[in-house]
Length: 274
Picture (cartoon, rainbow, N blue to C red):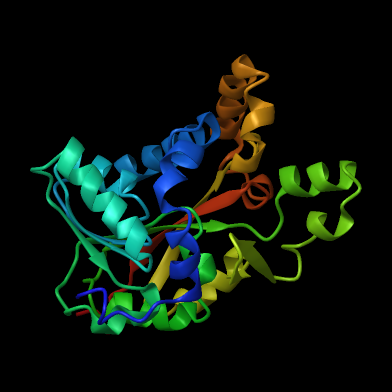
């Protein structure tokens, strides 16, 4: 789909402004690396064999290129023209033969994607928090996956211990509780983006009956959010300790919902599959 044929979303416009420096500020940051490594450990466990994976909100292509390096075939979508351009340049420079097809397509427009069946679905780091109707996303994904297909979806949580504690200590009460209502408006380089913070239960309901939740893994429980990178760099040895604590706590029922993100593992149900 050409850029002209794809209507811009607010999230797409916002991330257009972040694309060129996104890898430097997040992908290659120590916190970003620690959180992504935690997601990848689960992905390697779940995505067995050589799969055809549909990735939503692919950003600059870090995950797509990783999965392609493992032998998977990736169709990677994003709402941001600049992110897709950046991802395509990275592929040319880093892995020109990688089996990755980057496409400009907002998640809200999944209905425009040809109904080719995929073996698995992946979305990392909060892209789905910017979508208003998760039930429609689940319906569109169900049309493109077979029974038993795994979906790994990483959301920002509603309650983040690090964020609330940090802003409370700074005397910024409104920011400390900004996620708690389940919705807020983020301003990214002057562009307003509506952000939703559903609970794990909310997401499970939205994806039923097409998908069944198998597990929830906390991401960034003790590892802080990425906006604390400059502070974290003052304690370089501490990050490995915090990451080790995350590996221990990530499956505990209460703590797993209190990190910066939560990674949900769904399976496509047999009902109306295909």
